[in-house]
Length: 126
Image 1 (tube, one colour):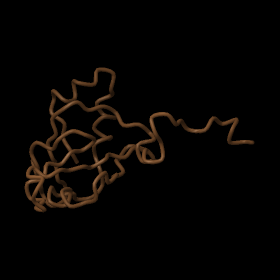
Image 2: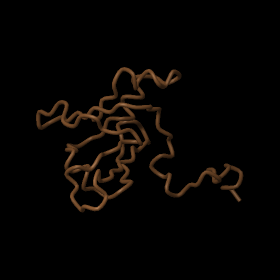
Image 3: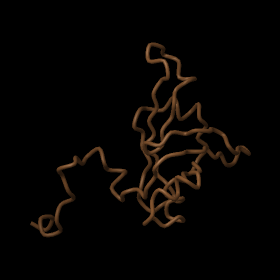
Image 4: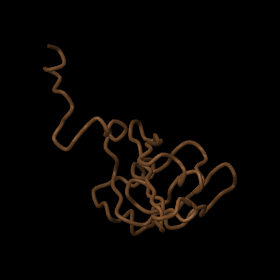
């Protein structure tokens, strides 16, 4: 789970806070070390009906292969404090930045481009 700061929650005026929080909660224990090592642009399903969050990271020192100093981003927002809460059943990471509700197509975004749209129902029946 990532916990957006109050300021981050206020960046999306039209968003439902319960939906926004569900969009940033995932099943499983994801430590910061694990998040640093998973494949770039890994998509993790959230507790919302369909959206996924995208995990990215980059090394603070690009010439090293070490991942211990890599910054981790959830949906493009940096984790500013890892393990804010950890009782071995729930891990909470703090994020700070602009957040918004996720698209229902976020799990399939690699198949879409900025110029493609889901097929129109009439086209599917042909």
